[in-house]
Length: 323
Ligand code: ADP
Ligand code: MG
Image 1 (cartoon, rainbow, N blue to C red):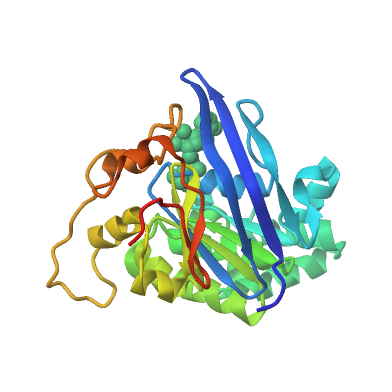
Image 2: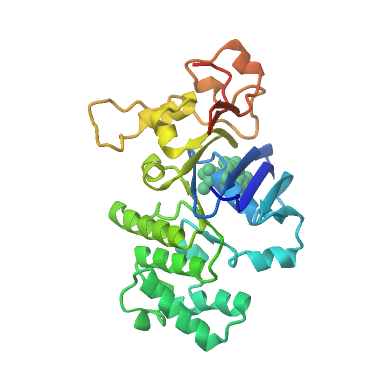
């Protein structure tokens, strides 16, 4: 495996709210290498999107603030860069694909113009040439009849086509890293698989690192090389995808896996939902945030916040309990 293109170290992001300070991301560290797909998985509200937005410095301030940490991209700390420098990286060497393409596309511009714009801006490619490249990219993301679709507006595209358009926008400047935040959640299952297959193929063909954010363990199993499981703003377990599925170590990860249908289609085992509520990020406990829902919790879990510790070569868990 080559050296990581992105290294996130001890990232903490908080929001000032009416209910007090909310710690959305708490001491999160991970890295991703060229050509690798890292999945970040967790329930809604676990801090996945805030992690992604922090990387690109898109956290609205106020109410949000990146309190501490380092985000090294190609060795340079994104948190220390000037606004101009970070703008030259966004949509260029780091691209982001969001869940709802309608909200990240401009309804007043044709899809072709929106794909051509970053090429024109970041690569100083003449407009005509950039539009021609946009047409090529629409073909690459398998939009039929790209020559006429390049002049269509977003509302003339179906949901699946818009998401393909977003992938084309993301690929436009040949990024080194793509962050895809629940890119297919709004689409039906068949279209989801087509789009994720396409994204994964395009990323691995160009040796692009991919951070795939999802709440769907089926997506993780099919597309991720490595997985980081988030709970209450922290990474509570991380391992290569196969290892995590074969050998989940954290009680939360085990609970998650027991609560969704098995990827091998085995329906003999009943689905068991995790009881209890996700933690309140405005008043996190001193100890383990999963403790109130954990059947194995001990007295120590109430008082000691577990950090990630190694359980096997590439496998880490933040849990005090030994198996
Ligand atoms: P998810 O894992 O579903 O992507 P998010 O990262 O979006 O979760 O959010 C994590 C938590 O951060 C939310 O539950 C919320 O408490 C807090 N949060 C996110 N964005 C804001 C905001 N703009 N203002 C206040 N709190 C926010
Ligand atoms: Mg989210």
